[in-house]
Length: 190
Image 1 (spheres, rainbow, N blue to C red):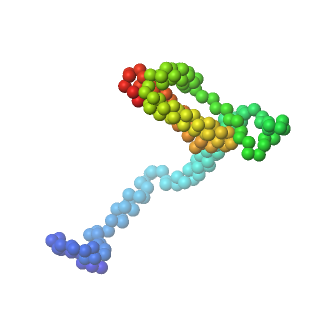
Image 2: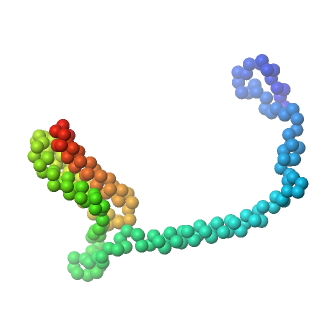
């Protein structure tokens, strides 16, 4: 063991520090005294009582998962789709044919979108030709993306990434329609 350094000694490297420093007194007897149960206190044999609680918690978790699976079986995507028929009249779809996916959107969204689309033609007519071209190109791109995503979701209805992309595309369309509507109302342009 290395001797402790003098209080005023400058240390220029960690190697100059001592490897170990002994405490001035033994601390273990005080620690052990605090850990021992006090006289008249309940014994520390708690593990016997926690074992049934652990089993009870495990059983509750299994029951929760079973209930969740039972409830969730009715909300899986594609469960309530009508039976598919191939173009040749058989009940088996053709290889590579996309499943038609039906997506139910919020009625409020449908009403707002319809109102914005009805006023779109009048708003486009009041725009400069260059701006009108850009808006129509944006809406065409969004419409194409929606069609592609709906077709891909028809093939894989449970794909969460495709579902999120479709929702984002709906939001993008509403953003463009709202921007056009607000720009024509204020006369400031897009």
